Length: 101
Image 1 (cartoon, rainbow, N blue to C red):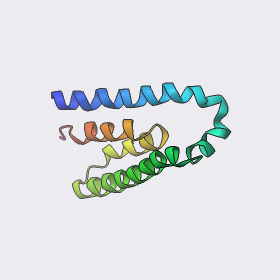
Image 2 (image 1 turned 180 degrees about the vertical axis):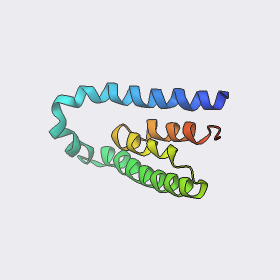
Image 3 (image 1 turned 120 degrees about the horizontal axis):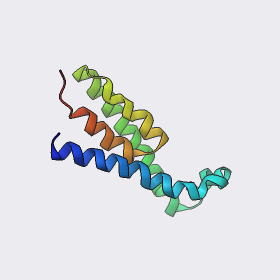
Image 4 (image 1 turned 45 degrees about the vertical axis):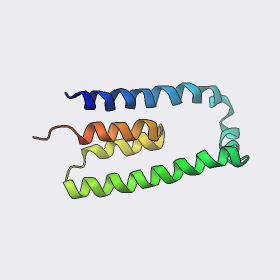
């Protein structure tokens, strides 16, 4: 496995562990979490930035998988939705750069 693939895998794991670690602090206050994202301009900017980034990533990943006829990397899309772009994008890159037989 190349150093780049190892880097993608490590970043995917960190991108899953760190956000979930901080999210657990909000787990009991889930009903207040979503309104807090749009409470003011300071919190709305990263929210919309992530929404746009995830949308672009999803369209890119789907079109790239269709063009390459390799659909396995699409398992990164549910990870992106459930955990975040910080885990889904490196996972997609890790899966996309594998050697196909």
